[in-house]
Length: 150
Image 1 (tube, one colour):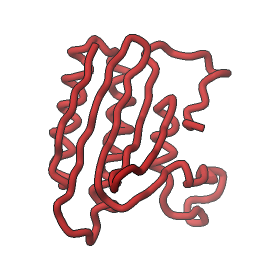
Image 2 (tube, one colour):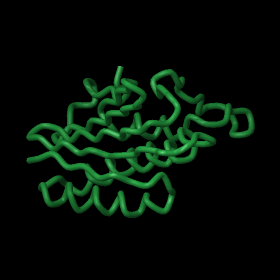
Image 3 (spheres, helix red, strand yellow):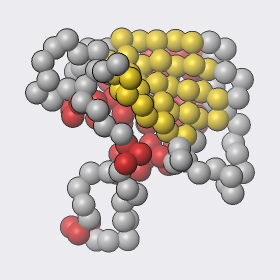
Image 4 (tube, helix red, strand yellow):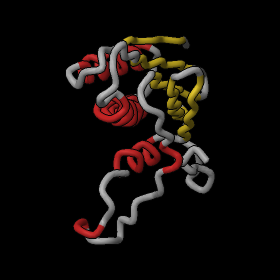
């Protein structure tokens, strides 16, 4: 089990390279396909949001890295960037009972990340955002799984 890191250019074209790296790295560490799929969904959403929103209209240099730490019990992915601060835990759950035309825009990607991961944490230190996504490698009984990181 190990630690891995990739640096990315802040361009949407880099997402495919990132996802290929995540898949190869996690599978080489023996992580099941279902868990790899969930982690890839969350990382894709997080990195796409950073590229589209965190760096918009900010001067270079832009830093964007993804770290994977694969342990015996969990896989932790950290998305690290020097873009605008944004704490996803401040985004309320979307009201999925409302008709689509009446819903507030945005928030579905964060809802997706909360649904596929076991914990999501955010911090900003020394000008860097760090979004940490944690997925347990063994399924937890539903009554104990929150998927909200709170």
